[in-house]
Image (cartoon, rainbow, N blue to C red; front, side):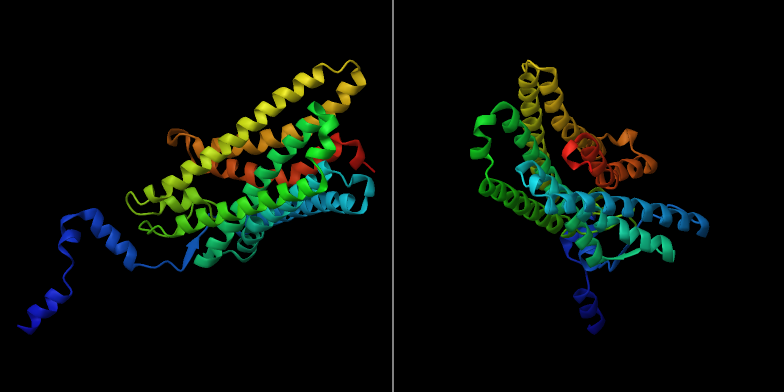
Length: 323
């Protein structure tokens, strides 16, 4: 009798026995993951050290380029304008995004390890989403700045005063914070059933969703739909603004005036195109064209390359930033 009572006590619920997915869900909730394994790009020590040196050079280039823009805007009183205020904010977000992902991967390459703690992965995902979404918001605001400057120059001081710029920058940071917090909480509340190995060199949502239990990613679907809608709205606003900008520029009678207007718009348009095209293709590409090498290349293009290229693009095309 006592043995039967013990067996009944530890017997699984009927609904869990009847439904195999419920059984998987039960196993997920009872398990805990303390760390994740990031993608290892090389197995030999020589290649690991080569990756470390390469990432160190990329990090120093991003730090130098964005640092020069920050110091130039802060120290140059003639650069205290709305456009350069948002460029300063963009440089800070670029530094934040690359410092969130690359140092950990450099550490793993140097010490020949792949581990990242569960809390460290959650923190990395949160800050990466925060800086990336803040950068996208700032690029949208900078597009509005170019639109007002060219299409409504007489209202520029009114629409983009110091208080309006501060409010827009605060709104961009607040929305990025709420967005990253919502996404991180939703992602890490999912039960994980497929191990702890991530197919990427940093923690990102698609790789974590691959580890989730059967159909558990549906809980993340609402957040994903909201993210796509928000990004699509910003993209439509950018396209509409630049259509109006180019129509206004083409109506400028002097060739010198058109060249000056294009020189302030083309760098921003190039940065936006690089950032949006790689990120959208990475997250919306069909599974049939997905491969580990392609995923890695696209993630590097939208997470590592823009912080390095943005200062170069803006400094080459903007005469005020040249020494």
